[in-house]
Structures are given as structure tokens and as C-alpha cells.
Length: 312
Image 1 (cartoon, rainbow, N blue to C red):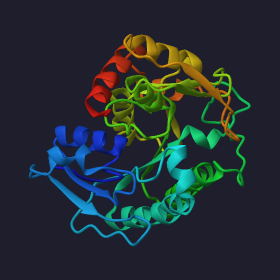
Image 2: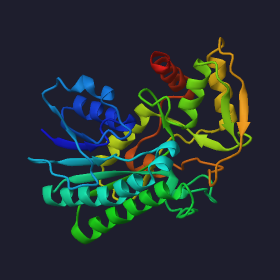
Image 3: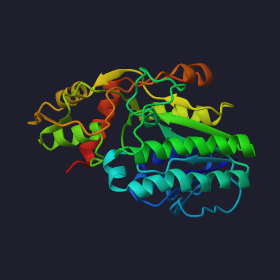
């Protein structure tokens, strides 16, 4: 029986990963400092014998007794509202935290997968984005604390792979959505759903022409599961290549809530906000035989059902 450590376990993606690996028969060790995560996301696992939880900040020394076969490093503030409020913590978890977990993987002889992001591409000049694109990032801009933390994370991970022979995997995650997203997350989709359900104005930044590509969480988790168990150590994009404008997303969500009295309002585009975002998933298709299966209509419907239970 395999044992896996999942950092950021109480977060949106981390909690879904805990569920998936528990269902696959793994002994799951969750770790989270609860800076942005919530125990409500994993409380259903606390009564299970094969799940244990450590309330710990991975930026500090990490020790987990016993063997570890795998490590998934998903600890980090991940939305602009969080990393702009907590810039130092964001940089520390991407640097010190990753260093600590790579050291743990080396000692335990574990395979480690680190969660990178499409933000490493910055405001891209190449479209769609392939893994070979090096990005267009402003290191001293407001988003730099997150972008550069993830870029450093990738660099130190590859250094441990080449210098110490640690088995490493790197996933570059594009916009993902689904149940357990925080209503006050600050990202477009939960903001639009929360505002629509509360009959508040829907805030669209810029003219809404900027694009994103939204992947349903179940599809993303499947891609991560396959990547962890693959033999591929270079970065892999995981996301849904179907591109949509932010304005179109807002209109689709509003149409799903016909009783809503919300209207679209426009505010200035934040500094360094990417104008386009679309993954090239050719590598994932070839190496992992993976592609997203849940279409946006179905995914939005499932997500809205969740938000209706948590929006006050």
C-alpha cells in the first residue's frame, strides 16, 4: 500500500487530491497551515483510518514519520487577492517550502510532483502556450511574487532532479474550477457566481475581452494522477484548451441564474493581468493520453449547484 503526502491539503485542489488518492487506496497524509485552506474541505476524511492531518507551515522544517512513496506539493496562496495580501508568505512557500519538501523527498526516496501554474508564462506573447515557451513575466510587478515563486519552484525542482536524482514531476495548471472554490477567492468564476446569486453587480475588469481557458476540477485531478505515475520529468500543461472571454463567461453564468438581478459593470484592468491564456496540451495528450472530458456547460452547472449551498 502506497503512502502519499499532500501539502495544501485543505485547499481547493489539495482536498480533491486527498479524495482521489484515498479512493485509489493510498494512505494519505494531509498537511496545511490553513492560511487559505479550510478544514471543512477535508473533514469527511478525518474519521477514516488511512487519512492523517498535520497542521503545519511547509516553509518551516518538514518532518513526517514513516515511509513516503509520493509527495504532492500544492501549498500556496493561488488567487491574486491572496498573494497580493500575503506576498512574503507566497514567496516563502514557493522557495523555502519547495526546498524543504524536495529535501524530504530525497531523504524518503519519494517521487515528488510540484504544482506550478500557467502564471509562469506571464502575459504571454505566444498563443496558445506550449511548455517550451519561457514566458513574459514582470518580476517586480504586483503579480511577480506568485509568478516568480512558481518559476523558482520549477528551477529548484529540476536542480534536485539533475543534481540529486530525485524523481520529480512538474504540472503547469491552467484555470481550474469546481466545488470547494472559495466564494471570496477573488478569481473570476467564483466572483461571478457569488455576485449573481447575491444580486450584486458582476465586476468585469477591462472590457472583458481578455481570455481564459477553464478546466473542470475532476479533469485536472485525473491529469495530475496520470502525470505522477508517468516517467516524464519535464513540465506538462494540464488545462482545458477551450478559450473563452471573461465577458462571455460572465454572461453564461448570469444566464444560468435567470432570477438574478445582477448587471455587468466594468472596472480598470489590474496591472500585468494576462490578456490571453490557453494551454497547448499536445504533450499531455501524447505522454499521458489525457484530455479534458467535462464540457463547460456541465462543469458550470455542477459548480453552481455547490455555490448555491455556500453563498449567503
